[in-house]
Length: 246
Length: 229
Length: 131
Image 1 (cartoon, rainbow over the protein chains, first blue to last red):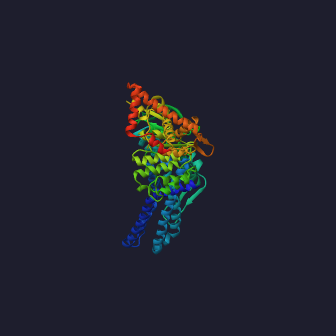
Image 2: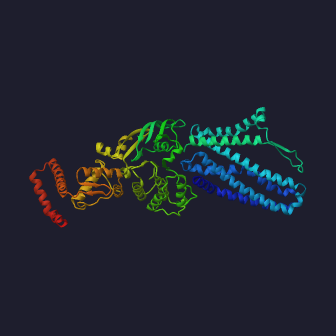
Image 3: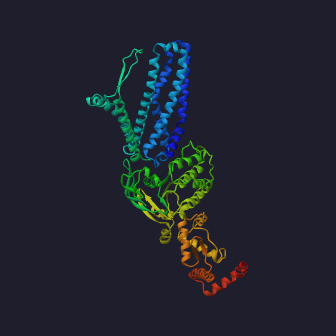
C-alpha cells in the first residue's frame, strides 16, 4: 500500500502542471460564460462554453495519461525497474487521471450551479430534467474518459513493444489498433449474440421536458464495455511485464 | 548466481550480442569492457531484465530475468538521473517506498559521503552530483546484484575517485556482486575482481584481473590494446 | 589513486608494501592492521584483493588474524627478524643480478657500494636514529 501511495503521489506530481492549467481553462470558460451572459442577454446560449468544457472532459484522462507516459519514456528504466507488477504501475496512472477529472468536473459543476442560480428563470420549465441529466452526464463522461485512458495505455505499450521488432512501421500497427477494435466492436454489436448477451437490466433515461426520445440502455451493455476495458487493461499490463524493453 | 546461456540479442536485423554464455557468482566486482557499441550496455540490461534476449536465456537466482527481477537486482542507467520533481531526500523516500530492501540509514550515510544535501532539487544538480545521486540510490539497496552502466562516464577525476571509495565502502562482498560497464579501465583496475571483454557483440574473454597480471603481465588496458585492433 | 604495476599481481605488490612497512618499523610487532575494507578504501583496491594479501602474509607467518578482533602484525620477533633478513637478501640478490648482467665483478660492486655509502653518509646513521 505504501508503494502504491508513493506511485500515485509521483504520478500526481508528474502531471500536476497540466492539472492546474486545466483548472485555469475551466475558470476561463466560466468567465466566457459570464461575458456571454452580459452581451447576449437572457438566453441559454450563454451556457454553451460550459457544456463544451464538460464534454471535452471525455479527453481528460487520456490526455493526463499520455502526458504522464511522455515524461516516463524519457527515463523509462526508472518506471519499469520496479518490483511492482505492471498492473500496479498502470492503475496508479489511471487513478491519478480519475482524481484529476473528478476535481475538474466538480469545479465546473459548482461554478455552473453558481451561474445558474441568478438565471434560474431560464431553466424553470425543465429544471428537474436539467439537473438529472447533468447528474447522469457526470459519471458517463468519467467512464468514457477512463476507458479512452486505458486505450491510450494499451496503444502506448503496443508501440513500445513493436518499435524494437518492426521499427519504423510501428505507427501502422498503432493506427491499426486504433481502427480495428471499434470496427470489430461495431460488427459484433450488430449480431444477435450481442443482443442476447447484453440486453438485460433495462435502463431508460427519460427527459419529458426536453423534446427528445427517451434513451434506452441496458446494464448488460455497461458490463460488456467494462469487461472489455478490464481485458484491455490486463493485456497492456502483460505486454509491459513481458514485452516492453528499455 | 547470474546465468546466461547462448544469449543473442537483435534489434530489428542488427545483431547486438551473439551467443553469450557465462555465469557470475556472488561476492565479486566485475567490469564489462569493450569498445563503444560493442554491446556492453545491452549485456547489462539483459541481466536487469529491462531488455529481453532474442534467443537463449538469462536467469538471476534461477529466475528468468524480466523487469520484475528488479526485486533482486539494483540497476543504474547511464542516461538520466531521477524524476526531476524530487529533491534528493524525496528521491530516497520514493526508492524506499518501492524497494523494501532500500536501507535508509545506508542511503543517508552514502549521501553524506557523496556530499549531497537532502534539500537539493534534482533538476538543479550538476552533472557530477547527478552521477553521485544515481550511485547512492543504487548502492543503498541491499540486493544480491548491483548493476551500473558507465557509472564514471563524464565525471571528473575527483568525483570518480570518491565513487570508487564509495563502492569499496558500501558494496558488501559477502553478499553482493557489483557488475559495471566501463569505457576506461585504468583508474578502476585495482577495483575489479574480474572482467568480461565484449567485441562486436561476442564474448572475447572473461578472466580474473589478477590472473592477467600474474600470467601475462598485462593490465586490462594493455590486454585490450593487443586484442582490439 | 595508487598506481600498481601491471606485471605483478596487485595482492603481491600490497604484500611487499606491508612487508617494507614492517621492516622499517612503520608497522610494529603486534600492531593492528586496518580492516580489509578500510585498507581497500585507503589504496582504492578491491577488498577481496586485500583479503588475499592478508592471507598470503598470514601464511608466511607475518600477520595473524584473531577471531573477532582483526588482523595483527605477528608478535613473534624472531619471525620478523627473519623477514628483515629475507628482504635484505632479496634486494641484494636483485642488485647483484643486475650488476652481473652488466659485467661488473664482485670487487667492483663492493668498492662501488662502499664509495656510494661513504659519499652520501646514509645507511647506518639513519638506521640507528630510527631504532
